[in-house]
Image (cartoon, one colour):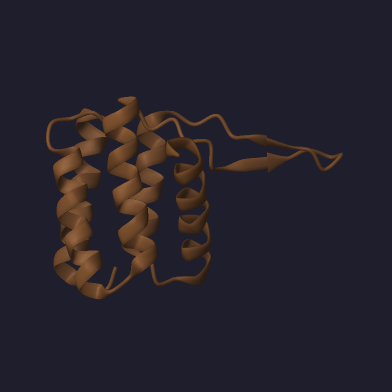
Length: 119
């Protein structure tokens, strides 16, 4: 994200999740607060993925979204096994540099997967 205040909130949330996990008190509220910054930045992708993320956490009490895939020698894709905490931390780290081209592509993957899972 562009605003320094937003990145500070994300960094604080990263520390909280690292220490206490995805269901720690205040995680959903922090995501909602960070979303307000995304609205100020007028970044619809980040705004949407933040909303979908906290909705997913509220509904599923986990963050077991299958977004990252590996490919074998035959070209078959299969989801990378990653725990909830690492998955959310990965997304939060992408959001820190959401203007980076590759990060935006991965954020789009999260958006698409979260939409499919929720709706």
